[in-house]
Length: 511
Image (cartoon, rainbow, N blue to C red; front, side, top):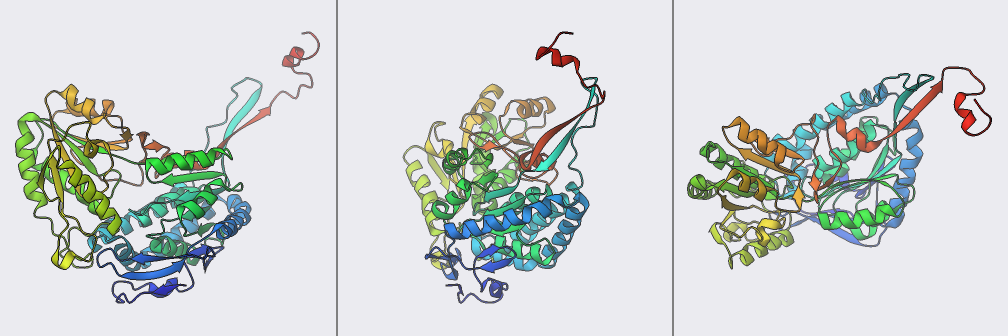
């Protein structure tokens, strides 16, 4: 069953491209064979917009076989050849930018201004970056390190990569998984979240239309339990890259270790936002609201814990609440909308549960409600500010993944940095101060894969993204990502032409 819903054409202009199914294997769309269906739901309205057959184990096997068949030729392509293909890919995605933006807004509930100005341009930039990076897969220079031999290092592709992407940034996460893998000469099978498969499928179609060979990029859309676990445990998959919650990441790691796969995990986050008493208060307030509410707070790097030095604390809470109250909820496709719904009603209810439980031990300054009226059908939740929660409380320690910011005071710089580090996570953080020594200390001592100074959220293709501690290991984006997607091989040549080497005496004979 592969049926578009009754969504108006202007909201879903690419609907006809999904008529043949939600799998993409060996360069063409296909139907899932699990025997179960799933619907993509517009979270702004609750309407089903696309119903499709989920992938089962047989579909995963077919996709892995297609990737395995495509691997030798793609791996043997010159770096320039792969680079040219990626440049063409970027051009096709740019031509279809509006289709990508609308499909992403439809399935996720993101405001169209976010998908048009962030998700889609960022993805095109990622493709262009890896088109260039594909030509720079160099190892270390050759040298005579032993004296009698010349050594050099080769970077070689690993093989078939099996990746799993989350629902919060489906297009960008598909790009972050696919691009470094194929730029390095691997082939890939990607499982997007079943809630949000549309832009991953459009991405794979665009790659094929750009001339990337069949089987290099494959998409299987199924549940984590059936399709995801089968993909991770598949004996012909040489590497797994997963982005999602820490709890599911642990399960992925368990399965991957049974076949000794290369493993890359980008997991949960609980980013601290540390405001020292000499910070520009207006800048910090604006940064906190933007950093907490981007993508309706469904961002693993979102500002979630604001630690504010006591002289600024009361003013920060007051001004942040006031600014949150100006944020405009609305239809993601309406030009005046700042904040859309959460991805699903289940996610909205999960977020609301955190806030309701927090009322017993903290102060809900603003928000903390599900709006009614025109918003009742959608998965909307008001921007929420919580103050005075204990450091060991649930809302401070757990990833809420919604439009909720918790604010706590601190007294000394030592205390502020200690509190920032006091969760299991370490993906991202920010520090706000006019003092270069304070900010320098923050960058050194906060344990996170990214630390912003006087800003929070921006990312760039040239710099790595990945975490410390329970936020996982490995890097997306940047040239550092090739460390995840390549094998390092040492090659050593004898330069002496001597038949009996001096070291042979350790096995037979004397000097």
